[in-house]
Amino acid sequence: MAEKLVVVGQGRAGLPLAMRAVEAGFRVVGVDVDEWRVKRLNAGEPCAGDVGEADLAAAHASGRYRASADYADAAGFDVCVVTLPVPLRDGAPDLGFLRSAAERLAPLVRPGVTVVLESTTYPGTTEEFLRPLLEAGSGLRAGEDFHLGHSPRRAEPGSRRWRLGNTPKVVSGVDSASLTKVGDFYGRLVRDTVPVSSPRVAELCALLESAFTHVNMALVNELSVFAGRLGVDVGEAVEAAGTKPFGHAVFTPTPDVDGACLPLDPSYVPWAVTRGTGRTFRLVEVANDVNRHMADHVVARLGLALNRRCRSIRGSRVFLLGLSPMEVAKALCRMGARVRAAEPDADDLLLPAGVELAEPTGGELARADAVVVLSGDDRFDYDRVQRTARFVLDTRGRCRGANVERL
Ligand SMILES: NC(=O)c1ccc[n+]([C@@H]2O[C@H](COP(=O)([O-])OP(=O)(O)OC[C@H]3O[C@@H](n4cnc5c(N)ncnc54)[C@H](O)[C@@H]3O)[C@@H](O)[C@H]2O)c1
Image 1: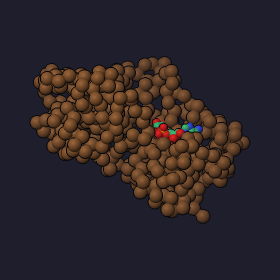
Image 2: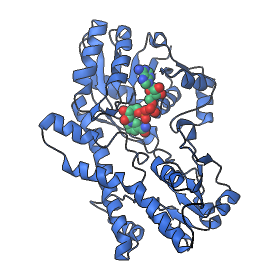
Image 3: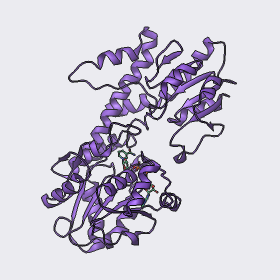
Image 4: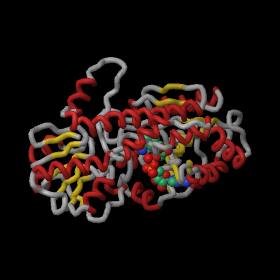
């Protein structure tokens, strides 16, 4: 019989993993405490991650996938992957989700099984927090009786190019047998695995990737705020710099810090550094400050652009392509704009008061006084936006033309 995989958490990280594992031949139970989500998934309605109806239908058709809100259905697993958030609350990581899952999983841990944490979290979480909970609840020892490791998730939301299967996966274990088991498991799901020497390295790797994105985003974001005053098109400079074949990575200005593959609150990294060393991670804190203010900058740029067209934000029809960051929609509504928005993942979102969802049809786009491109999602037709909209403020560098202003 196929090996049994339990994926704890059927959100943006857990659901795509579950789908990929079904494809790879595992029997998968996706455990999630959210009964609404479980019901939808079992009815074939995807509600998280880059998982479409066809993916979920194929998983159900295989007879090897189901979601459950009951941890009893996790019993008898061979491999369990935990994909729960460890959010920052009041400046410190909230390990509540992880604790509750670990306490319920521990009695189900049997000799020989493998448990992997995928959550983005501070270095030490797998070994100092998860391990003792699993050992206490099972009466078994990690590394001796069962295998334990960490493997950070990497995702480019909305990307057609980078999927779980072709994105190299960093793997680790609390001992060499665990590393082998964790590596073998992911070796069945992804093309390349990258073994590292300990879960701490894997955890820090995820924080480094997140900080790298955050700092580089802040660099181009701040540059874009000044570039207009310098009379330079920052987008063109970013593109030109991107032709450097070494020592450079391309980042484009964006207010969408959350959607830009940052899997965690940017303040997490400074918190982890301060906890471990007593020092402050100034660079990331400054980046955080710059990025937080980008939504205000977008609204200010839109105000200026409308002003040049003898219009004000109040009363203007603004169509948002994408809703992240929500601060843009909220500020526009507060200022009296009539805001409509297209958001492919709207199911997951709490809409700000005053925002109506709509499809980005030619008519919708043409009716708007301004279209603001907040998302770089490949599911949108950016050519149509450029062709039909009267004015486009593009924060993602997806449109070009006389009617387009880029951030
Ligand atoms: N989303 C991404 O693309 C991405 C990228 C890199 C890293 N990560 C990391 O993956 C982890 C999960 O993030 P996510 O985006 O999938 O979160 P999410 O909020 O989309 O999903 C989390 C799911 O866990 C469920 N849950 C909460 N407590 C539970 C419990 N005790 N038992 C079972 N289910 C429970 C929730 O109902 C929810 O469905 C985070 O640590 C995040 O930093 C995510």
